[in-house]
Amino acid sequence: MEKINNAVKQQPILKIRNLVKCFGNREILKSISFDVSHGDVICIIGASGSGKSTLLRCINLLETPTSGEIIHDERNIVEEYDRLTLYRTKVGMVFQQFNLFNNLTVLENCMVGLVKVLKQDKQTAKQTAIKFLEKVGMAAYINAKPHQLSGGQKQRVAIARALAIQPQVLLMDEPTSALDTQMVGEVLAVMRELAKEGLTMLIVTHEIAFAREVASRIIYVEDGVIVEDSTPDVIFNHPNDPRTKAFLSRVSN
Image (cartoon, rainbow, N blue to C red; front, side, top):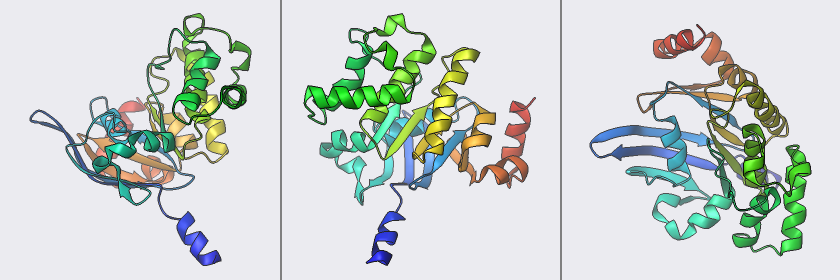
């Protein structure tokens, strides 16, 4: 029985297979394939326009893949849109622009998914929301509206909202790109802590130093293809593809 349990545990949470995304005649993603396993912290790096954010949006089905498979729980989610709401409770997402509801308080923003999607009663949802707001250092702001918060605070609330659903995987699409330097530090500190705790994350980021420090794997994407998928040591110290080396040389200068 122990062997069976270990085998199940080692199964990837997500299997991305031959994912293609076209906008008109333009092919943005070109047969992307990789797995996301328990405890992975995968940072996706690459130049602007390389397809990184489109990849994350396809994985969360915010964009419909042109072809390919996204396997979760041994089912191809691309073909089972009736399971999409349930799937998104397992594969959460944090956006560049926070996407908070401006008419709701911080607490209400973190409760809404728990009540509307998971059908928790309001008291249970409140306790859960406060727990995760405390985790990101935002419990003191539960009655504030988003317009009263800094960008870094908004993003920490957005992370708490995503965590409150308790997803198996957290997708983060450039979570620091809209922030100034000080606010970037606030958000990266939260993300470092989540990585230490073993949360499975797939992060699109331009924060190369952060990726080198925190990631268990780095995926380098160029022109809609995965050029290299390896450990930080290989990617940053011994890249196998000259395109990876050229990109890292550009961003380090």
